[in-house]
Image (cartoon, rainbow, N blue to C red; front, side, top):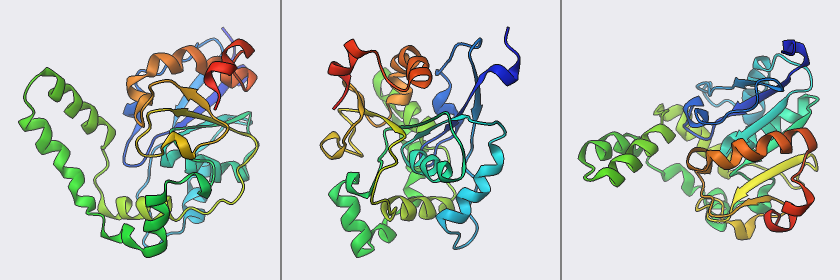
Length: 235
């Protein structure tokens, strides 16, 4: 077995209001990779995105790691990448620049309507799980409960504000973007130059984990999929 210093260190950053549980079914060959998990911290009052990212940098302990961020976590790892030398920078179900944000988010940013989003409604997930009838609804309720696990209103307000107001005019050319063609949060029609997961939704890191387990090692090592797959997978 390789020494830890010889392994490729992969840091996973979860999506908005989620934690490491969304990666529980993601596995990488232990003889090549070492997985680490980044966790959300509650932001300081009026903390800027830049200052928050600076705080997150201290949790990356290895040289030339791989950063993988989901949804808003993809924005965070892109901001972190400005201060790190990376082997790979990968985003999942996210955006590479402001142009890829859907029109409703751009409108919310321009008008300030994002301030009206009732973040306390995250607690509705608990209620939904209790009243769900049937195996399908109960399973979906548990899935949503796993996906929305951070209820702190300061964090939620901060995260929503920084997601819709994120400013990035030109994508980082090093970003490897993996996106589902059924993503309901960031519709595929706004996304360019991505590896497309057929049938993948915004939570595909959870319910399409087999795709990631099959293809992530290759993407991390080579920075792409095999040529015979590119025609099918790239947009």
